[in-house]
Length: 470
Image 1 (cartoon, rainbow, N blue to C red):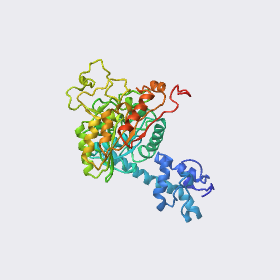
Image 2 (cartoon, rainbow, N blue to C red; image 1 turned 45 degrees about the horizontal axis):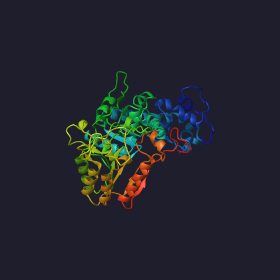
Image 3 (tube, helix red, strand yellow; image 1 turned 135 degrees about the horizontal axis):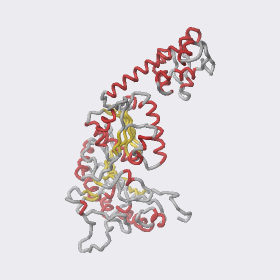
Image 4 (spheres, rainbow, N blue to C red; image 1 turned 45 degrees about the vertical axis):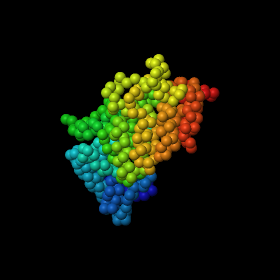
């Protein structure tokens, strides 16, 4: 039975469903022969051996070889012809046990069992989005589980910023489809986040690996989408559903995120989307236009986190320091760029930015609560709580932001200022809105105003058309 040796047995021929009595078969062939009974994959064959190894005389599969490593586990089975003859029947019996268990799980899940499992990929905002999703689903009676085996709904909260991230998710989808969606407990599988927003219907068309596709602004609709997908069509198949509509006002400000119990650090999303339209970035197309949460909801969340023992809060946004809360302005669309008293409308519309910076759009901050004001309000909640923020754009490090950071000891003296390139011509092609000199002047000013400042940055190497000199 081991090492590729062959054996003869009528049970094997029966399992194969063909051939004459005594046809030679290897163990690899025999395990594969049981698969049509399940109508599933080799992965379930390995699962079958694991589940029935104690009672059916089958050993656990080898960790690296899977089905190839399956071997006869009972001495009697190895030594007697009767054991060999009945081995095929034994495997079929084990397959039927697993099949019945699988059908039972599918029936339970189709009947409305509400257990959700979420895997998170990508940035800190995806981590916080997952917490928001759990908060939304918890209101609808869903229970969070720690493993996909126990879930009736499996979500992948995805990233689309790099090709490698998407490749990993495609591989994970195939595994989930094989082990849980078709071959396991019949769970509903969905893709959420930026990859869902980027690929849209393609995720439903390609190999039909998912049942649900939902973008970052569609999370409130998830309970309804799940109910739609669980309804079978006339052919007995499950439906699929998609919602990738971007919003101009969704911030999930009223949703309480479900965080890990006892955590000492927490993420709070204060602004969603981005208006910068840098030449290399997909964020405006997967996260939509900028919109900020009301400052009152953010301060209240920080206050609750402080009561729960959280010691460090990170404020999040794709362009976090572009925060502008217009909740107190009757018509934000009519707001005009901030101007100093006595200045005419012909003056620089970008004066709300750091000196020497501009953008492809005119900033509207009139009457809004600014990022500097938010930093001060959050820092005052708990002087013992550390405050961080990411990811900012250099243009929005105005003097009032630098002064707020310097004024409060609990605002960490660490700034992330993505430069992306040290060449002015490259920065122009990237549509970054500043020169090399303006960036260096900003760094110098920040170090002067904030003693002991630490600075980190991002750089892109090999951007389109970049020369050796650049």
